[in-house]
Structure formats: structure tokens, C-alpha cells
Length: 624
Image (cartoon, rainbow, N blue to C red):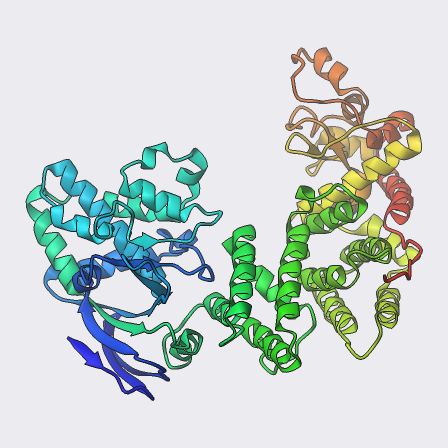
């Protein structure tokens, strides 16, 4: 039944069952225009009017509901709720769905923009497609279901998903046309739309043809919804925010999307620009990274609001932009920040210049708390001569902090926060802000003597250590060794490269004899202190070091200096993968024995290389 609603205030009292407990809450929505509500079953919604087409607006996220605990459990949870309630003859309340009629839709169609409820509605469409396919397979007449899928006099799907990098629309239409097997392997492996459909197909597989009609009837009549419909003139942004503020928990991502896409309020030109920017961002940054981008974007200028949430921080910036009449400029900065964030996340995909090489190295170090600062840096100085030495010295500082401190996370986070504050002190000219950041780096810099001591003694392998960082350190040391030796080595530290302990992690009799320490307590203590330090670690350019790991130093040395010949000497056929020797291992040419002192000596040698790699380059103060 259609219910007229007071235009000034809409109060909806909702009673529903949730995990066995009766819950009551009130949603208060300020309404403008001819806002209407109706209580409807799922069948009534989908059979409402065959001319109706449900459209996912550009600013909404893609389909994200998962089918397993590792990717979200929403689809399976919905199915379990439907089985527990609808299929036993009861009802299942599925919450509020908010739609807004599109003013300039084709006169032959009625377009409803889905403001809230797209995940649930998409999931129901997938369930009904799975039911249709099951009925057709079992020879059950399901003609009436076709009205669910397509608009009147059309074979096109009534649900229009976003056209984005996740191929959600393509997958849904392929399922509708029974053409899913033709989808690419990548889509079949990754699409959440397809996985949801497959879950429903598997669950329906054991239901007999006799029971299918009863199942469909109970399903469409048992799902209960509260449908809110708004006219084109309604302020959907306010409605959406109020739903969240009065008990309907909405994902922060959706709230930010809503805030940005209706940034212009009644200014349709600004809203169109905002929706174009949001479409660009959501189609170039994947969902898992998008949440991080919004968080990093919000933190890049340090905390400005009491709570400091992503939504609060971005809302603060938007309000300031409105007050200053700079909304268009803010949107351009928002889009540019997304491009810079892509450079931070995927520097290898960008131009192969020195800045992107440095960003790639920073990414290898895996310091996500540094990302707000990197974004602020690129926004402020990305196209100026000041940027390269600045990023280089930040990279070197990070390595020195990671090596020197056992728990460097707080130091790095605090540095990033302070640096962001320096960048966004709007009352200070850009050259002075650069000076403040330079001073901050100088204040946090680890001197050479402290770094050398830490570099030679730090445990770099084993529990709690970061193998990706160790590989990065070794790769940079290899390149520096090759440069010093003049050998044109081309070493790529990929899956076929093994981090090798020269003195093995577990000592055998051969190694105990070679180390010449008879006191077992002292032997164990020195072994534990040095075995995982840089002086005892090197690389082998083949994936399996089992042929080498517990051999004597003399045998290991053969593999370090000439691995191809070493394999031949043991009757192992040469392999296609590159197993050439590397410059880092040339160090062993004149080493006849390996003991604790040898480890210390090599550590000191590598530390001298490290000082030259991760050093402070001269600053460039040109900021234009």
C-alpha cells in the first residue's frame, strides 16, 4: 500500500529480527519534495512496473559482497537468513532501500537511481538468475521470472551496474544471457558477482524440480522491504547521511562517495564535475586500495577535526572549499591526488624516471604509514626540482630508521605526521615549508656511526624480520658491489633468488670444527648473535639452496663463485633459469675460511657500501 509522507519529516518505525533478538529503532529522515514510502515484498518491488530500470550511480562502489569469510560473508549470510525465515513460511526483513527517480530518463523507461541498497538488490538479481537456470535445467516453467530481469519490450537487464574495471556489468549481463562460460579466466577467477551466482547455484543444486516453484514463491513473498522513493528534486545526499546518523549503519566509503558526488548541492555543473572525478577515481583504484587512498588523502594534511575519521577530515575540507568558493579547485586536487597515489602504489607501472624508481624502493620497504606524507610531498613538489632529492633523502632516512630501531613504526608515523603539518601550513610560503621539512629530516637523521653499528649487528632474517626488506637491502648492495667492481652484472631478485646463510642456521659437526670454539655455551651464543646478520647473508641466483645450505665453506664457495660449474661437478644438469654468479659473492674470492670474525669483517665492508647507498643527497630548494 502506498503511504503519503509528511514533507517536513519522515519517521519510520522498523521492527525486525536480527540474530534471534527483537530490535526496534527509529530512522528520522528530513524529506524535501514528494518523498514516499511503501512496505513491499521483493516480488512487489521487482514486479512494480516493467518499465522501471534500477541504475547504480557512478559514485557508488562496485559489488563487494563476498561468499566466504576471507572475502566477506554477506552473500552466504543472506542465503542462511532466507533459508531460516522465508523457506520455513516466515518473512525476512531486509531493511530500507532508497531510490531516487532520474528526471531526464528515456520516456519509455522509468529510471530509479539506487541511493542505498545496491548490494542487496544485486544479490537478489543473482539469486533469481540462479533460480531461473536451475528451473530451466530441471524443466520447470519459470516464465514469470523473466519479468524480473528485463524491462518491458527489451532484452536488456533491468539492473544497470557500474561500468568499471571490475567488469560487474559485463558479468551480470553474461549471466543473464547464459554466456558466463565465455568470460575471461581472470574474470571467472576474481569476479564477486560471478562467485555470488555460483554460491546460489551450488545451494540450489540439491533442490528437486518439484520443490522449485514453492521455493520461488516463498522467497519472493517472504522477503520484506521498506522502499523509500524520492523525486529528482530531493536532496539525496542529506537523506543518505541521515540514514547513517539515525541507526542505519552505512559504509564510510559510501558516505564519502555521497559527500563528494553531491558536493555542489544545487549547482548541477559542480555535481557533474564531482561525479566525473569520482568515476575516474573508482575506475582507476581498486576497492581494496580505494579505502586506503581515502584514508591517506584525509591524513595527508594532518588531523584537522576532533575525531579525525576519514569522513570527518574530507567533510572538513569540502566545507572549507565551499566557504572559500574553491570547490572546483578542490575536486581537481582530489583527482590529482588519486593519480599521485597510483604512483605510490604502482610506481613500476609509471614512467621509468628517477622519482618513480625511488617510489618503487619505498614501496618495497612496506611502510604504509608513510603514504600520507608521500602524497603530500607529491602534491606540493611533484613537478619541481626539489622533489627528487627530497624523496631520495626520505628513502634513505626510512632505511636508517628501520635498521637502527627495533620498533621503528612509531618513529616513522610521528615523522610523517609532523611532515604533513609542515606541508599544509597555508600561512607559510612554499619555500619556507620546504625548509621546515628539510629541517625535520635533518632532526630525524641517523648519523653514520650509529647506522653502521646497527647495520652490522641487526637481525635481518627469521621471526619478526621482513624478508622483502632484506631482499631490497641485498639487491641494493649487489648493485653497489657491481658498480665498484666494474662487472656489468644484471641481477634481478625474483622468485629464483634465494637468501643464503653462509654459516648455516643449524651447525653440523663440520661447521663446529671449523669455528674452533670448544665451549658449547659460547659457541651457541655467538652463533645466535651473528647467524642472521648482514655479514652472514648473501644470495644465490637459483630457487633451491638445499644443495648448498649445510655444506662446508669450501663447497659453498664453489657455488658462490661459479654455480654453473658447481652444479656440473655434482652431475646436476644445467637449468634454464639464470644461475649466474653475482658481484656480491666476489667478496669470497680471497676468503679461505669462514668464522665469526669473518662475519664481522664482511658486515663492516657491507656497511661502508650501505653508507654510500642510503646517504643524504644535496638538497635542491627550487620549488617552481
